[in-house]
Length: 151
Image 1: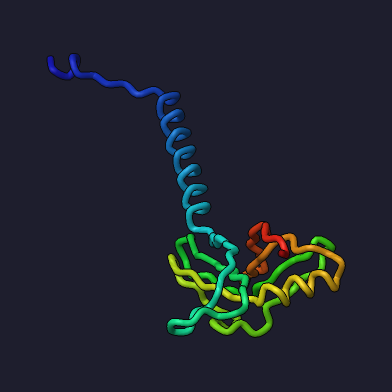
Image 2: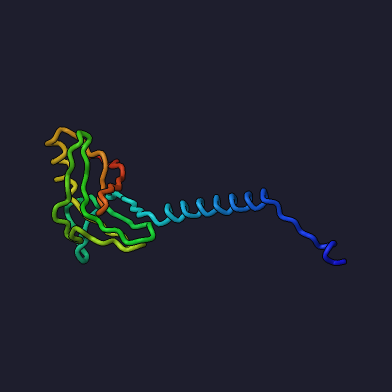
């Protein structure tokens, strides 16, 4: 008598729709994991002085900072500036780091350039600085727009 009351039937259409929904969610989760786990570098430009004890340095420097905002370490292979005419100015001998440099998750690093020398080199090329950049081992370049004026 109870067998007739609690009879459940599942059609093939319901099973097919269930499989399609689960597969769609799996694909969406796979894409979200892929985008979450990509390398992400944020590049920031600033200027300032070096301090030595109680003394300020005399030269104004341009600082190009790379921040690893991704979930995995990333290897930086170079840094520099790109001029509006397409030529690049590379940071050859950074004082604080040496390339290649492994930047851990959640950490940052910066290189510095003498501001006056940098603008003089750009003027020699009859161009202005367009953006600052860091290159990673996969040859991807992360950029920040350069907004400083030569005063």
